[in-house]
Length: 68
Image (cartoon, rainbow, N blue to C red; front, side):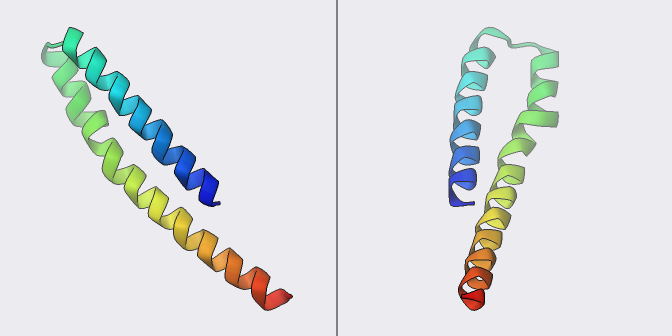
């Protein structure tokens, strides 16, 4: 699980980097709308997902330990 949350964070960072490059070339009403509706909501959602994956990983480690 830990690698999944690390991978998700890395992919998100890469996506946001690409968005910054795109945004430098695409600056109109639609780009701002896209950023507001999708990009700006991405990071908080990913943060919550990573936190949930970390909690799940901790729980699974505890279950595994308890079963041994």
